[in-house]
Length: 178
View 1: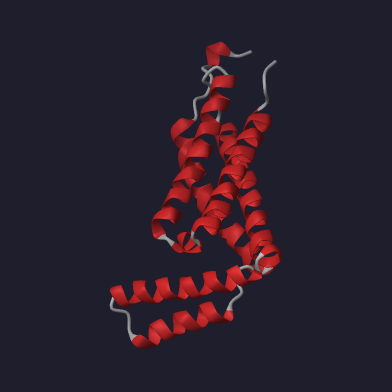
View 2: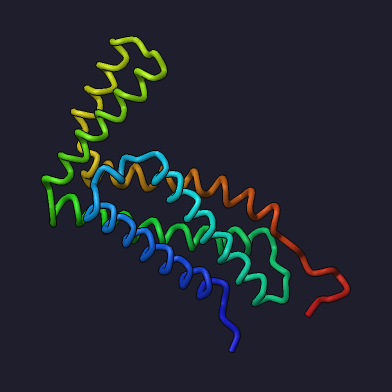
C-alpha cells in the first residue's frame, strides 16, 4: 500500500522530534553546558535540515521520483514542524516542570557564553552590559518565549525548505499524465 505525503512527512517528523528530544535530554543529563555550545547548535540545525531532506527524498521515491514544488515543500515543512513542536514541548517540560533550577543554570551559562563572544568581537562594555541585562530580564523558557522561538525557527527553516523545494522538485512531463 502506498503511503501518502502527509504520512511520510509525519513519520519523519516524529523521528526528528524523538531525536531532538533525546539529544536535549542527553545534553541535560551529561552536561547542561552542551546546550549553549555553538557546535551542538550547528549539529541540531544540520540534523533538522537532513531530516527534512530525507522526508522529501522518501516522498519523491513514493511518487516515482516526481514531486511538485508544493509537495516537496509540504513534506519538508511538516517534518520540521512536528520535530520542532516535539522538541519544544520536551524543553518546556524539562525546564519549567521537571527541573526549574536547570533553567537558571542554563541562563547563567548563556550569559557567560554571550559575554565571552561579545568580548571576542571587541564589543563596547555598554553593549555587553545591555546584552547581559536582556538575558537576565527574560525567561527564555516561559510559554511566550518558547512560542516566539518556535515561530522564529519555523520561519528560518521554511526559508531553507523553499530552497530545498526549488532544488528537488521534479514535475511529471506532460506526456506522462495519469
